[in-house]
Image (tube, rainbow, N blue to C red; front, side):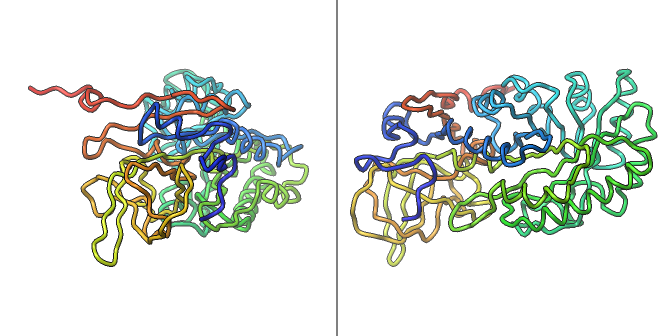
Length: 418
């Protein structure tokens, strides 16, 4: 069995998060259910933020990784800002207590109503991803008689050496302004009367497990920044994005301090505030998906363990063939099998693990799917008309339901049969 994630342990053979025995949650709430550790979220945030001391900086949580209000509130109280990609995420961030002045708005497809909402809220920055978007922001700001603060997102054509679906900084990706056009776009932005060009941004992907891609990206960003400053532009922010990897299986990603050290000498004494947009790093290993074994099947040379969680609850294995460690809530000795752990969805791709060697669980036994705090619930759906699971926050020796389980009526809320 693989090494347990932080703040998980077996106490008297019962899997525990912080000081809560996880079986007590499933007895009261049922399964499937997402469970988060408040302490681990805070530990991760402080580890990331403190690594860059004394550099002037702001850590902006990538809300797309986990938009649950309780998670956002924990980070807001710790001092984090937010990196958003929709007006819905703006609404969630503000509702959770993140100040508008600590919010940046990314994404290639900002609608005019979203731009207006962000301007009305008074966000820190728009990360502009195209020339046409720049014109749209100018038009909305002009109509509102406001000035829009922007940074230009540069696509540096740097390979983040990660999964193709989560790389964002190569020239074939849809994100950002091509590196060869960045200076021209920045000069254009500086000429607009209702645009205030304040910085440069780049985000090259997710689950990055080496420092080198960041170093290559930062070098290119600094070349652009220095050129613009030499032309008389007053830039305040340098946004390096997020994407720092975590350990799902046997990866050895760098720690934030390694990233900070690699950047320190490059940044020098430039009077820039460093913006960082971690998502996965802050919440992934703080979350679990708990599920119950329904049935076991032996089809002759192949074993299936059918559980009540499915691809609509955790999509990453089906989307990316992603690996998540799985642990029994009650540790015991038993006959080992190699099995696919699958859900009830009517799709062959509905699985949580493939060819996983583990003790054969009993029917009605509970399992914990680890490192599920990022891109877990937030990517969930009601596919197969399955109500979405509840969410629980563990804090010390207590736990709180922070999202109720959906009901059958929730499945049809807003529908009308003519």
